[in-house]
Length: 413
Image 1 (cartoon, rainbow, N blue to C red):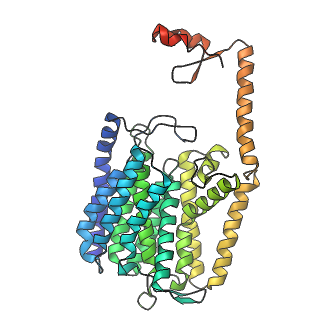
Image 2 (cartoon, rainbow, N blue to C red):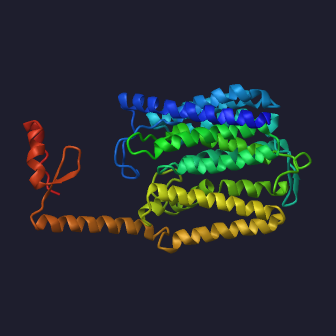
Image 3 (cartoon, rainbow, N blue to C red):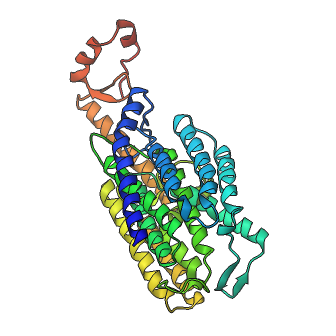
């Protein structure tokens, strides 16, 4: 009962703190002109405030102060420097773009605080694929790589309104349930705190007049929190926890199912970029959510809802299978689903060769249409910002500009 009361207070406090301070962040960002400007790969057309993740940072810090007494191995004191590093590097990336290498070094520094805490040490895979004891150096390697993968995978799915929040909320609900059943109340409360912040942020992210993005500041903090919860989940011992609805030896596959959306999307996008002889971190619009919007005509809300529901159903399926199925059977099932998903997204010409051809063809058609309009007398001129307007609206634009600036703008498309 004491945990339930604490959970309710933490949830309400975290939600209200994020909800009532988000408008202040929007006001500061707009006043200081720190908004995100759209480019050729953006899913928005207007300058939008970013850095909503600032609210995530101080909400987590406040929550850790109140729940720190429940951490057996003083995990709160190890989380604070890691979260702070993620906040600083994310804030810097929102203000001035930094290199992937610098961001990776900061992430390594942040996860180092987590890996050295004995609470997160993975001593065994509990018989998964007949693997039991794990040497400490191997744990550091696997744990570090896993956390880096989760952080960057979550960062990459933050491409449309609502998606990162919805996926994050699904993940937090699942981890809240797992850690409550295993009586790891500190991590259950940590999940509740992050979930409350994401719920409060979602309303602003989907708003039409008070919109804000979480930015790298938010996605790195949430991704870091998810990676910490995943590492703790894999460190659970079967001799202690028996109330889970699945066999703990299937924990690695359950963890993959929980993170299926960011992991699948990252693997798919990296494969496309490498096949096109580009860097794996080079920006494009080949993400799964971009495919749903650009080619299937879904809205941001629809795409986010569909992906979130898929994530939840996928986890529920593997929890049911994990209650009785052996490791090998679940591995085969997971591989089969991933192959099926890849086939679905590539069947309709979403493959390495034709995806680029589709984009080039669409641009060519647009150019031809513009030339036809020009020949019919509907000439388009260039605005000062580079966009096009019909000739009949040219006069009002010219009257608002100095004569010298108008001399070089009479460009016919």
